[in-house]
Length: 132
Image (cartoon, rainbow, N blue to C red):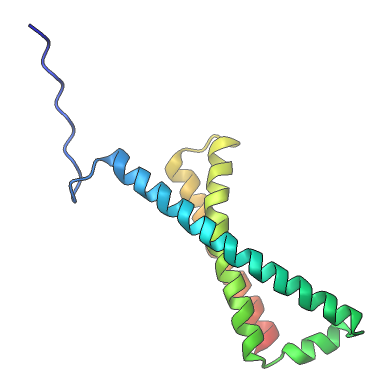
């Protein structure tokens, strides 16, 4: 006669086990990091292209700031850039915190989220300061 199986822990609300919920959360983070990477690649290319064009056109920093002041398209573009950074960075930082610094999963995720929130606030503030 075989030994009785140990009782399985009760599934959380929604009928999903804790490991399944973590796997889904990890897949979502992976998805958002890849999606934000695509947006960032486009934003970086546009940013560098405009920067090279402005420098070769002989524009000074003051002239560039004069053109960006009150420019809604500029503000919208860089707001998208900032949001993409704020979505992209937390996942990577959480991985670094886990692998290099030995933080637990939850602590690493919260550290990454805190950095992402800081980037979002500072970045949008900078966009507002330059464009408004």
